[in-house]
Image (cartoon, rainbow, N blue to C red; front, side, top):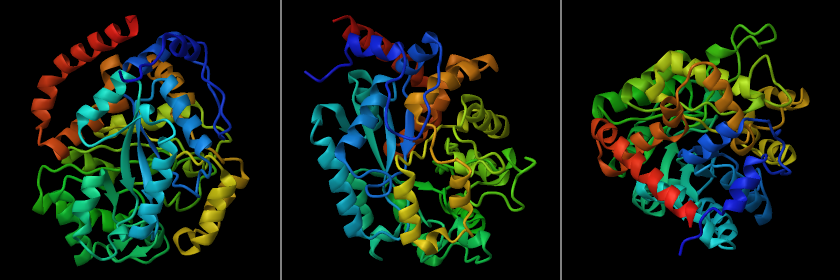
Length: 413
């Protein structure tokens, strides 16, 4: 029988989030909020490949255990970034899977949306692979089919710098504007063909706009998104904001265009990108402000959540130093670290408190269920299984009812 969340674990986590060695802070929250998070499908994003954010299996396993016991269903997990190759992908995949192999009963690699629901029901961690670079193709489009089969569910065309696919966010920020290339168009064609979502995080404004236009022209109705990007508009009027803002943040125009595709934008609770604020610990209110900003901008059906947990500032700085071209930001990131903005808002430690804050602002349980996982599930159902948004909405009440009954049955045993 599949491992279930024990009543003891539930009771313990309701008493307060477990401690962990990560940089983020634990925030108090109501029992009602903790129960809501547990009862809801919650999908975040972990964007720290092996060697960048973690180096020991125990560190990763403890992180996922903390998340599970506090109600996080699963994570979009970054395997590769910047200019990593296919061999790097294999290496990264090995490190993740070898760690999970120590506790195979606790993990569900996702190929279908039903895998996420099963993980939620049985207290497993849903593993949804992401690549923050297209360089893993090694110039060979045939590899896209293999990536799809291994479970890569979203991919970024450009990571900060200039790539064969186009110019990244930092390159364009520094004045090098290439835009989407013909090769980038070919990559998008193959992504759409195999149901891999176009992720525009890290992508330069012009390249992103070109990619969106290409999608709208050639694949109308196919959604795309930003899996972990903050809204630039939220920080532009901060007294201490830098003149150009943080190069990782996106414009309102980009977010609105994503929503029109049917996709979603997900803010990452990452302190160093909060231009002009750079808090030592992002507060639940500040995280809720990100969500609220996007909801007011694009609507409740097109907002999700993410984290960009780094585990270790030292490893991130070392990675940025070793990949200087990808982080040539005149010291922006390291300066933010120096100000104390060294962590990220780990969902297990912050989401229940965010829930209390959003309830106080008038958000309903239905609203939060969409933001925490429902909007991603709708987009993925369309991309992976061909389920129309209308059909997903029509089926949702019955799926939620059955899921609630099954969870109550298993918890009572």
